[in-house]
Length: 285
Ligand code: NDP
Image (tube, rainbow, N blue to C red; front, side):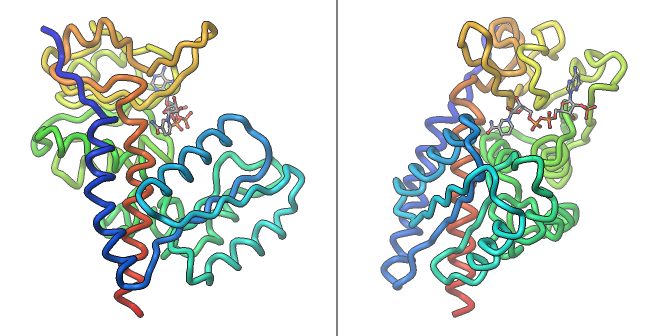
């Protein structure tokens, strides 16, 4: 069997084109959705991510502000900038690129963002609301994965979904979103004994470990839907996921490639959350 490839790049493009119409409608009513992205320091990967976010926003007609602060920025300066953007009517979404330098308390910073502009969905209020399926902003990578499943017409209810990884930004919210769609969910971690026992039983397998190619074809149930969240750069420069694509695609029913699977969906959902925040602001005018 050779798996059907889930083309995240094409699906992301289709959604961005569709959502541009929502942006145009807001603009014709005199409101341009705006996103502010704050980056502290010079981390090269973070700079690439921020650049991509700003570029994608421009493509769909969003206004975006890229605020680059030096690595030695004081926590109080960053908090003051956030307070300013929280009340800026041109800004509907605000995100802080992580990781922050170690002298800054990341949790304190995330809590300073207005929950109404928290398009990354990391504010404790939105994290709590995610548990009850009432969050304003589901975190972008897991919600992008859900969108891929929806677009591919993959049934979730009653299926056994196994999520490998329990980070606050991917694994845990992913498990909750699958649970809200009535999957039976198992979460595996680095402490799981006999990981293959669980992955081989998964109808839907989502892997977010940051361990290159750790899930091989023999760990996958024939016909399963396999979602690879991982992005890893090998010493030879090649970009790979957490799944060994070559062996996995011979067993899986559906599979996401890396790059071009989940990756493009993350920024797409950031755009969606920003448009939604602007639409909400419009309703409250
Ligand atoms: P974290 O390092 O925060 O979490 C990794 C998780 O994987 C942990 O819960 C860890 O378990 C678990 N884990 C590690 N090794 C194993 C193992 N051998 N078996 C089972 N579980 C294991 O990573 P993130 O969640 O932030 O990111 C995961 C991957 O996804 C990375 O490659 C990252 O680059 C990528 N990513 C991609 C995005 C995208 O847009 N496509 C966005 C965000 C991340 P434990 O808790 O026990 O330590």
